[in-house]
Length: 330
Image 1 (tube, rainbow, N blue to C red):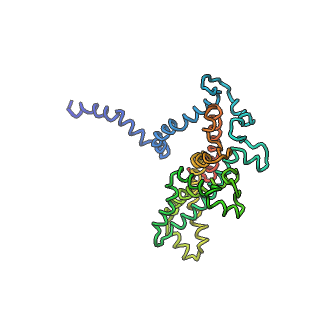
Image 2 (cartoon, helix red, strand yellow):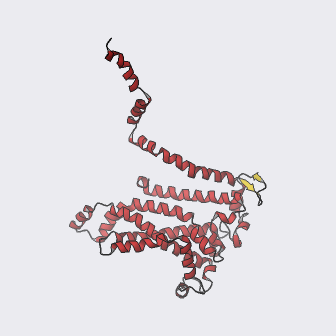
Image 3 (cartoon, rainbow, N blue to C red):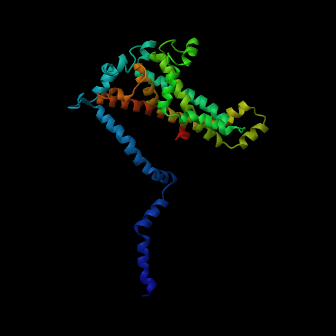
């Protein structure tokens, strides 16, 4: 028997080793399976930092914890039932309710859930429209575009605490310069602006729009710059107007980007904290506490129930946006 013949079994053994078997397994995977394999570490990390805390929050919501933390008692869904039936309203500041007690304006604006939804819908809507306008301007080639981009990004870079104090001072009834102007227009209350629920809600929405429109503009601008410019050349040759170019080329191609931007902002708006905490710490508007869990820091079960309800609403919003966008949003 030759040396080559004797070495053949050894080579075959190496070819069928663990590394070779794993390599062949990878080669037989479809593109979709390979993509999910690469995303496995992300899924594991997401489970650790997101899913586990969510499940732990739901578990905590099933217990009643005494104020002094001396006893813990399993109550099942009692915290959720009490929350939606109004039994937990006594724990909210200033007579605020979690759900509205009626359909009149006063009852709706006293509801923490309604105020949160109003803030989220209004802020995301106007941030998207303003951000789209800013992105369309920044997508043009003009002298000084670099400085315009910097000016648009500056509000996004302002810390939330400074932003909150800026708008608090602007609309303060004693020293603010914006209150008299808007009061004459009938937009805000003429006095005690930050102590009025409607006026304070309007101010916080404006503050959030001022800061976060730049975020939407940057995301939409990325979508605009990915469009093939030759499409516009063809459209101009065909005699399409600017509006037709926007309607039939720009808008359809950036809709997936807008969907992702709206998705991010909706999630952030539903769990808003910083700007409301900054402004409400300087004034007395109980309903502006919205669904901030720290309001219930001595009622852990109720806090966890509110946090889980908020997460469920965010999940519904996210799934709605994904279904609206279809596969392009994934």
